[in-house]
Length: 490
Image (cartoon, rainbow, N blue to C red; front, side):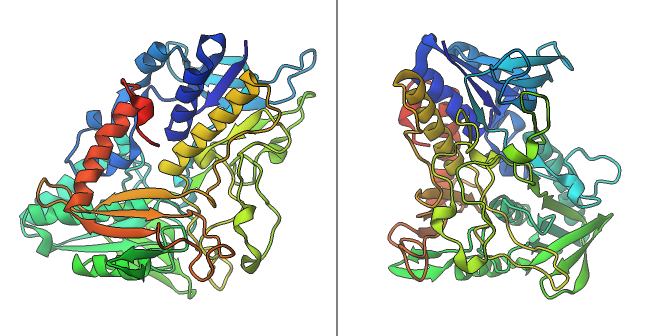
């Protein structure tokens, strides 16, 4: 009997674990190690953050789902990986520390035959002094929508602002990136437009100044270097698409910004031209930068090999080309295909947990060398596709005796779809529905724009909003492993 251990229970980990168990059956074990007791459909947190959904609408307990599927669930966090075993045993294992199930604080050595790292990111709020961690603690001056609890707190603060607006008080709302190396521009994009929409519904929009602050060098970069989307028979830059939308909704923007410090009611930021400036606010939601969760790795003798297994940012090394090279020499082939660790062939990483070879957007920095560049997005559909591909490869290794990964999920070869909400409402809601192929541009295959414009397009309207709502229910249904769940695409 083989044991597959999945570290992390988010989109990538949950997808990998559930498919692995379905394909392996009861002859083999699948274990999920995650510190969370609830599964969260993160794309809908922005709706919790404006009060149109409750926390209960976007989370559900994972224990009963895993029990029904026959998956061994450990509510714990992974602390260390021992891929060579230890003195006296060649069996690899991870060390975990329980966060629930009545075992809080207890540690355990959990052996594995195959390991999938799908731990996602550490929300690195500490990278920017004063950046709020979603808990409303003293010294935290901004809110977050990165988790369901964060979004609940964000909405509570937002409602206080709306009450002030109703009293005729002017308010400045600042939404965006809290550091020069942030990703998830899409979440901030959705949140700012949902706030704007809710203020219009409340009849207080005229009293609010809404500002978007981002580390993108142009609106519509989204950490993907922008794209050319097919609209109405024409190929238009995402820059035009985004600027038009911001202008129509009367939202101001600050580009190429690295937020250096947050104080009460004020951010200090540096821009790509080297200037330092300040922006005051009454309410601010700033996304933190991501880092690896901080798992250590040790060899058989107990020596620290973390730098061998993980990149400096804490994300796991896989079959990517990490050779430092100038932007002009970047290629689509730099990106991993199998997501297998090059040194330990029974270890894989999926979703945010793998280390990208470089950014997708052109690297930019201030004159003093401060990097101000979006880091690559690896969430949502790409994460799920990676989780499924890794699970399929491992299952073939276990059941068919394959010696190499049999499935691939390369961001330079896959397309992705995104539906970004710009406000809710049965007849008044809007969302930008976009597809991109491939996610990482391939300028050798698609000269000029790097992508196939026949499969890269975008539209905004009410239909997109309906699709967004339908997808919310479909993906939660799928995550609960309801009948026919495998028929719903990633």
